[in-house]
Image 1 (cartoon, rainbow, N blue to C red):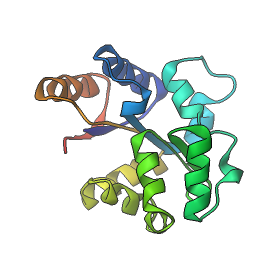
Image 2 (cartoon, one colour):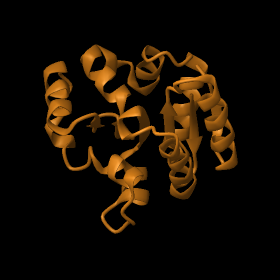
Image 3 (tube, rainbow, N blue to C red):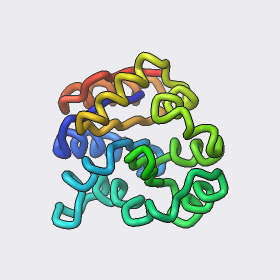
Length: 167
């Protein structure tokens, strides 16, 4: 399940709904542009769990090149978050590890290719890419059961989520 949030407050509220059901930062995928990260989660922003997750990849972008070894090495060094300077993206969560596993080939198709490779239909991936380019924050999670999926869908909508899809 995933959706786009237009501002930090909406994303924070949605993240808290995940946290309230026992989902941790390693269960949640977070994608945004580096510019959005700086705007909403920069040095002068309020300290929160979501902010910490967004900042995990900050400052290490120069350590990440276009080779699989460099990407895998960076993820090993920082956990499950990666900055992709060539794409101008911050990706945190299980998707970051999956991209590393795909190697450089997984990154050559850009964000849409990476999202499609993670199981998101191409038309939805293109919507998410456009949303990220427009300053949105994409959040995704794999619900453990149907009850969680229903709850998260409702919470994402209640917190101004857009393009909410279940996979």
